[in-house]
Image 1: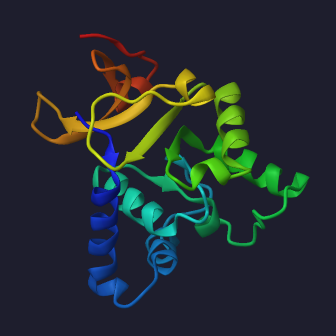
Image 2: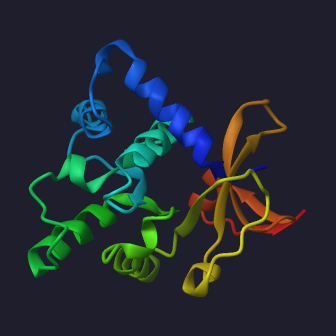
Length: 195
């Protein structure tokens, strides 16, 4: 099992941009095209909390998660009218409504995430309302072990690995190297356990 790596998500972003529909488009344009088909009222598996400056990384993460069969909400694509540079009650209300449509929140840790004003609020709101918040580390090197700094260490983290039952790659929610549960089971209410 391993966390996502910067190299992996950038490679995924390159493949997404290389697809025929994405010819010569920016990461933002590709993500917008991909999500256009999703109805705005549909439930999502994952609310992707991320730094808005990480568009290329977000493209790669989105492609990986969607490739694993999960629907992903990305705020600046689904709700481009939001002004994330200003904290307003109206913006917060839209984000709360969207988070209520999602089954889980992944907090994408990158070099840019520490500068985000919205990410800690999104994580806290989602954790308080649904309790299904997890850290999605995007690191330079693959590893099974992740220790989040400060409050991030309170949450489980996401890795991906092949499932034994069918050999397909899936997501895992982990508390440590030997305490984990499959993502789908976690969404159904199971907690990570020692293996």
